[in-house]
Amino acid sequence: MIHLFSMSNEQTHPLHETDKNIIDSLITKEIPEDLDFINLARLINRYNDFPGEIEIKNDIEKILKFWKITKNELFSNTKKIWSKSFRPSNTNKDLVGSGFDTSN
Image (cartoon, rainbow, N blue to C red; front, side, top):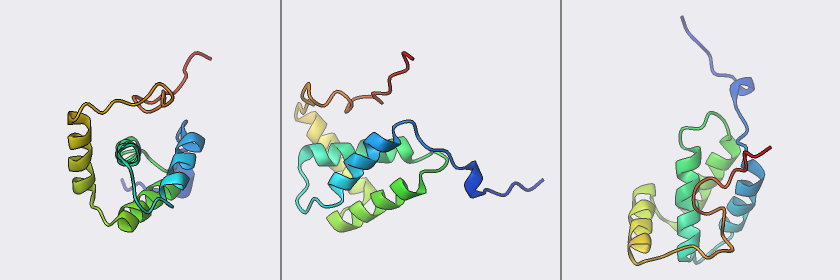
């Protein structure tokens, strides 16, 4: 049996709006900072196997090209950043983990 993937099968991630804002801020960064690299890497991990969110995935590819960096270079860079005792500030509560509130 052959299953065709159609646009109707695509899902919208629960954090789409928050993540789109982050993507929009990264896409214009000419000189990314450590937190920018960390944000892009975690968004790649979040959306890598997610069915749908083609716009965000395309934007991620645009950012990588704009920054002239591959995914492997990005992940290598973020490992170095974390190994140097980088920790997100308390104002970046959504940085670690998903930040998705399931209390409702």
